[in-house]
Image (cartoon, rainbow, N blue to C red; front, side, top):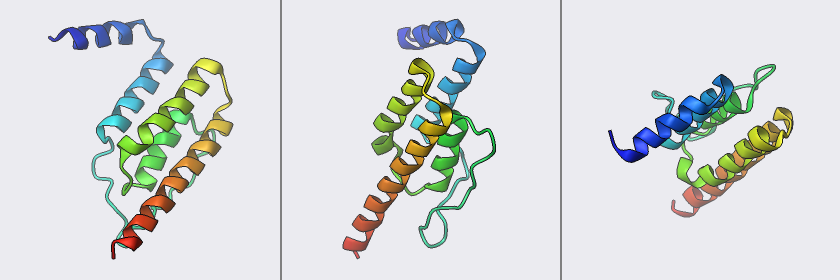
Length: 119
């Protein structure tokens, strides 16, 4: 096992269960997670409603499935900032989720504009 893997496992072991779930969700987000989430036939977002009591982690997963056409690497920085604001600063999940939805929608509009220009 590499040094980085050992360090990650050690840090993971120190986290509370909820924090471990958030770390796993974020790792899935970074690695492309949610196998089988394909593009909608016309490249439009896939309408997935927000669940009652949705957590920030659940919202990120939903938004990644909603916008499968987006490059997750471009979203990584902003999404991680929001996750940190929620987990470390205690910002309410509802506020964070509202802002995440705006970020994903903005990235989608940019993506859509680029696709239209290249046609």
